[in-house]
Image (cartoon, rainbow, N blue to C red; front, side, top):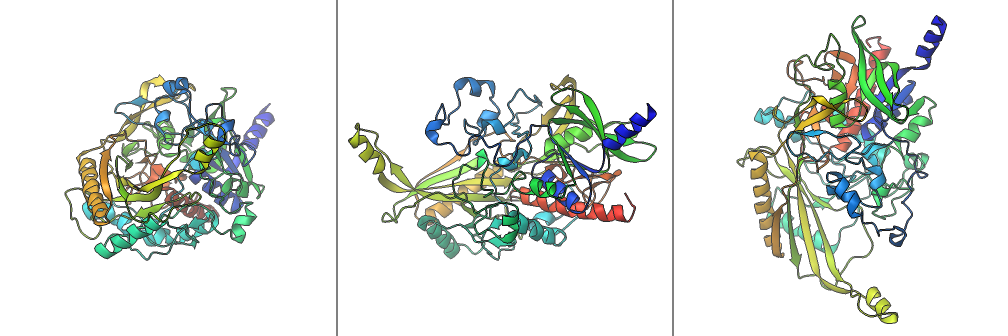
Amino acid sequence: MANFAIDAVKETTYDAIVIGSGISGGWSAKELTGKGLRTLVLERGRDVKHVTDYPTTMKNPWEFEHRGQLPLKVREENPIISKCYAFNETSEHFFVKDAEQPYVQEKPFDWIRGYQVGGKSLLWARQTQRWSEFDFEGPARDSFAVDWPIRYADIAPWYSYVEKFAGIAGNKDGLPTLPDGEFLPPHDWNCVEKYFSQQVAKQYKDRHVIMGRCAHITKPQPVHLQQGRAQCQHRTICERGCPFGGYFSSNASTLPWAAKTGKLTLRPNSVVHSIIYDEKKGKATGVRVIDATTKQMMEFYARIIFVNAAALNTNLVLLNSTSSRFPNGLGNDNGLLGKYVAFHNYRAGISGEYDGFLDSTTDGRRPNSPYIPRFRNVYKQETDFLRGYAAGFSAGRISRTSQDGIGADLKENLFNPSLGGWHVGSHMMGETIPKESNYVALDSNQKDPFGIPQLRISVAYDDNDDKMVKDYQEQMTEMFTMAGFKNIKVRDDKRNPGLDIHEMGGVRMGKDPKTSLLNKWNQLHACKNVFVTDGACMTSTSTQNPSLTYMALSARAVDYAVKEITKKNL
């Protein structure tokens, strides 16, 4: 019988385990397998294979029973996820329904999740800006939160590395606040967007309107064709999954690339309960998993563990990984695990109209739009709030289609819409400040359907966020007015934190084990063979979208970990 036990352990032992298969987990798996490590990827959701498991991707609007809308019953049963802009009849199978993993809202928080192989990489908005030196220096400059243990120069080569493989479209704009990258050709402007960019450039030395940088293949390179991916078709129904691999996802790119090495074992339906810590060895030895189908608890073992469960679930896994050595969660010697959670402030927006260019319109669709990089508090503190905001911008001709008539008259009206003026709009992407009072913790009484403690989330806006909203509205109104836009209307939709889907922190990086959980290599200070490279590791949030930084940090951390294994330090 003893031999059977030894064999069972051998069969469940790998060189590395990755928890999560989304954007950062996919990159961890690709890099680990590419360096020769037998790697187990644990995904709590079902399997989703590229192309074959995108059931709605080729459907026309009239093929959906509710024409893309969700029935009232579905929305009433899912009040949280129904707030997400991408949750509809065409994509609902890629979102976690509210009852699947309940959580405690000490303060209102909309937790948007995607549990399947590929995670939210099937659902993201695909904006991929690099962070700048200003972003990594931010906490040190204003002494709010702790200093990052890295600077832009540490991660710049890894940005280049992941950009070339993922395929990022954009212009080289030469802006210190938004470093250039390894870009494919950019998307086109329309005439009003270009006009606004030119007007802003004339009026302001420090403000710029550029074409967005996004993870869409505009001109396939050999490395993309080797992945089996093709040029983006501009269908703009990305949240259904793209059969062309036109945008970057774990399903289309990193996971199949890892599988080709023969070193990857992918295990869907594996809900991670906790990480196993061996006190005699002084390190983590494996992961406890609940099979989502059988509810059976099992264990898997490895030399190193990468935690990429998505920010809040990574916090949950570590908090639930208790032992005599770590009674308050793995690596949590300083009691800071779960604290200093931050996010992005998307509350504010502005709209307007423009009477010019009435001899022009647009044709077709574009999976991208212009972008206004941060311009507040960059070189000096110039406002009464800390940090700054970026913004999206877009313009389109207002089309009015008459549905009057019947038969030939109706067809004639539908095929010949009348065109109104141009509509312009922008939305804010503000940096929130990590604070100890914004935290997640385990509830001591309530459990999820797998018997795991529910996550208590206590995250809220503060006075700094309110002041930032007000400044965005004032500055954008000034810029819209300067450009001659009319009927300008600002809004603050007062949305809950979380709906931005950019939650970060709780397992932050830092220089000092007394004030941070991870070192500069994303390695737990107190448990060296566990790495965290998803949003949980972020020390601050910047104004840029974070996914590209997760990818770069993952590739960089794997490179370090494998070198440490070679040196027999892990």
